[in-house]
Image (cartoon, rainbow, N blue to C red; front, side):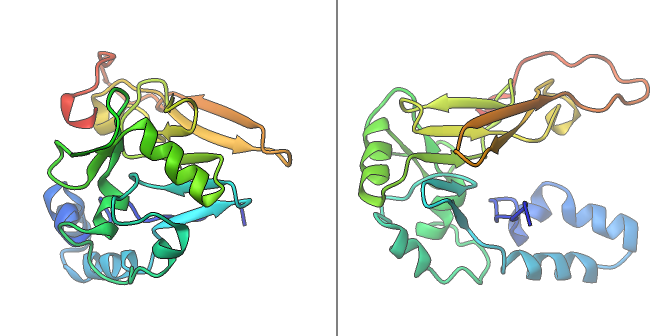
Length: 202
């Protein structure tokens, strides 16, 4: 009852083949059918969620094609993630801490969006906060855009080499935020990781 899974940019056929999930399924099951079942399931995951009508949750960020929550609700989400377009933007876009407006994302998909875009979207839709993931942050969470956006990254020591903490945001009945930070479980013969994120994840 307390957990809703949202789709991220890695829940796609292309990305799972690029970053190892397909290979892992092949190693464990010697068959592509398990991978196919997972990726078919990914098509049905919701793209966004709204908590208490005030906290907008998604994996990536905003889209220049989507001004309202109703436009997001009208998207045909039951499909493979397109290379571009509004559905792709929701999974790939990132807040820009330094510049206003929209810019093409250096990731090759989605956009970066400035503080003014966040303020306009939140005001138009009656939202207090955008809660999102998609970017490694070393302390597990990071505020942006005048605390109107928070990035929460819940994978500690990402890829077994980034040395980051993970974070979870909890809300009480009065919508007060509490952040839980945790380190990875110890692994045998593992050296301490340097506390520096690779450029790809920033």
